[in-house]
Length: 334
Image 1 (cartoon, one colour):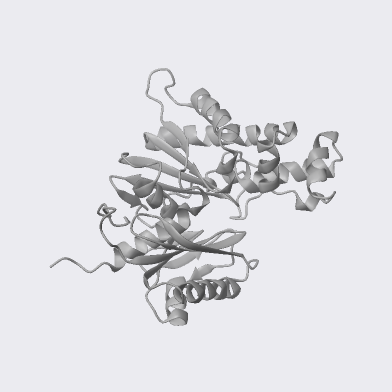
Image 2 (image 1 turned 90 degrees about the vertical axis):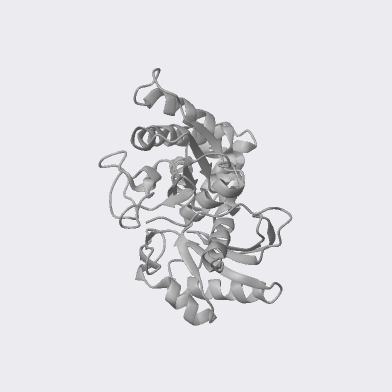
């Protein structure tokens, strides 16, 4: 299944506004996006747990609030999970409660307007290929590191979803048999070692074991280990906290190993790293590059892909969802 190509939009061309919504395990972000990928206004809400109906209510609230201030031509939603792209059903979402959920039909009935629903990583990859780090590349892999690991593959200006609409779920390749239990039901999935959740888990474990190495973590969360998240550890690492930097580097090692596996299968020229954990920048990417080079099949006798941070940051998903909805609703040329 492939998503459509998009024609380049000139800065001088007036393009209708689209609303993009990115649903993650911890937040729902919405933004009004113009034809050049620029966000004109953005709102965020906390994801209401694993309650599917509550998540849908948040989406409707955001559409109504932004729609009251902007004339919207289309609405696009990027949701984590495996999609039946023909019917826009969320077949399974590891971090939310959707199981064979007719999300598009539900939202269209609630909003009274057409809605495009796509995988959140597909949306992010589309945005980066159009407006961000992937410009000029005809083949790239996008990895979004947040609650889990989302993924997407762009080939010749199209997002490739495979025969059954489930390509790109790279976070659920089993990288450590018998390892940590994953929300998907398996053990040892890549996202259990190279995601924001993994980073937070390692920080909490240090704190719960009363390790002196966790003193900085506990100081940052008023002594409550349960409040140590991937975002907390990332921020401390950026501030120079040694243990936080060590944990980020360990996650980077796992990231590079998984990327080497993807390179063996897909051989792209570019890996774009997005999601909340990408805020760690080179603290994450430099260890990832070293691990990638160390584990790459045919190393020393082949070209190596570029591994770079996403230019659009955590907004890539909502920008891509908005832009894809604009493409799908554009009238056909006479």
